[in-house]
Image (cartoon, rainbow, N blue to C red):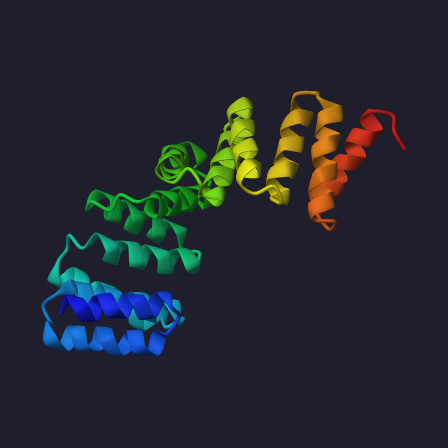
Length: 221
């Protein structure tokens, strides 16, 4: 029934959830002992906000195959969306232990640990996510934030710069570069980055505050 699963995934990518549900339902009916259909069905349910039902499908997949890494990932994503970061962390760790090796799972585990205020533990996972997908703007930016929290300021700046190289309208990366330059007593450069952040996002309150502080430091009006 691989074709039904493949077809269903294509429908999901196109945002046609109704047809995706039909395909995965048929895949499960044809092969009720295959966890893949349940995982795919769980993903559709999660995508349309039916989280409780999705959890049951992921759990059913794990009953059939406790090595089903993507079922752990699906559960982790639901817990993450619910801000249940400790449970999310456990699920993402299981997914990695069971062999899932893509940038998303490392990123999500790293972010869960960041929300649990454990940046030192988050660091290697965010680094791995950025290694596996060098063009993932959010992974690069969050890695920069993690490094900044750990006071690796020069390394953090490199990742904020890489973020901006990929997305020149990333106001938060500009703001954080400003903070880093201010930390290094480079008020003029900090002012330029705060100004750029405000140009991109005029209501960026933190950048506005940083700009005022740098202007005061430089004796500007």
